[in-house]
Length: 164
Image (cartoon, rainbow, N blue to C red):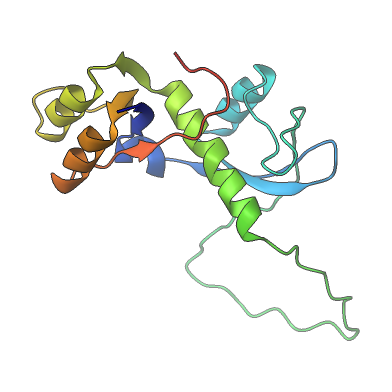
C-alpha cells in the first residue's frame, strides 16, 4: 500500500492571517493569505509565491483599502452621476482548486517534516502529549483514515515538487 504526503496544521497558524490582493505578470488577479505583509515580501523574494492559475512567480501586491471599523459611520451621499459598473472576475472551480493546492503545498513546506512518524506525531499533538505545531510526513491510506476517525485533522498534499 502506497504512502501519501500529508500535513496537519495548527489552527492558530491558519487563522492569524492577512489577505492581500495579488497579480502575476500575466495579469491574473488572486488573493493570498499571509501572516503579515513582511511574510509575503519574504516568501515572494524566495520565489515561494506563484499564481494559482498559471504557476508564474514574480507576483506583486495590488493596492487595496484596509477594512476599518469605527464607532459611528455617517452615510455618504450618492454621487450625481452613475459610476461605471466594474466587471467582477469570475472565479471557477478550477481556480479555487488550484489556489487550494498552492496553499496546501505552502503549508506543507513550512511544516516540520516528521517523515514516517507522521501518524504517531499527529496523535501526540492532538492528545496534547507534544507541543502544538504544524507537521508533514508520510502516511498510508489506512493511517489517514484512522487519524480522521479519531478526529485528527490531516490533509493530503497535492504533489508539485519534493518537500522531503
